[in-house]
Image (cartoon, rainbow, N blue to C red; front, side):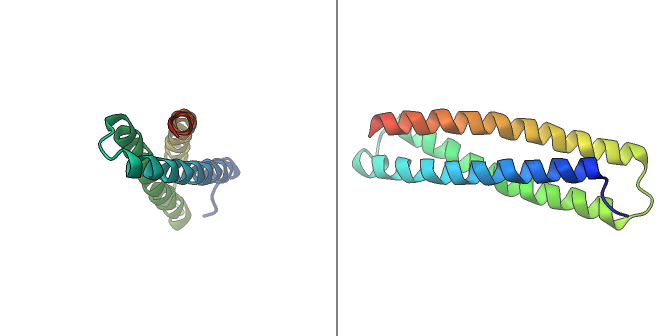
Length: 116
């Protein structure tokens, strides 16, 4: 069975957001590492570093989740309308979460830039 176009669009958008999160979090991690080299016991920077690592973990787990959903929807012809709807709702919820994470990463990067 092919994936419904609405689900495919959600997957594409979600992947774009995950790519942006990964790129921004990587830049933030680089900033945090530089600051931590100078101030290794700075608790605030350690917390920000941990958040950015958690964001990277979110990206990895989200990509696996997307893959699982797509494989499930692609593999069976017996997908009911409710299964498709549930997959769409799950993806939409995760997409919303990714947007929140993007905002927080931007705030974290700004804080780290101000600490340099």
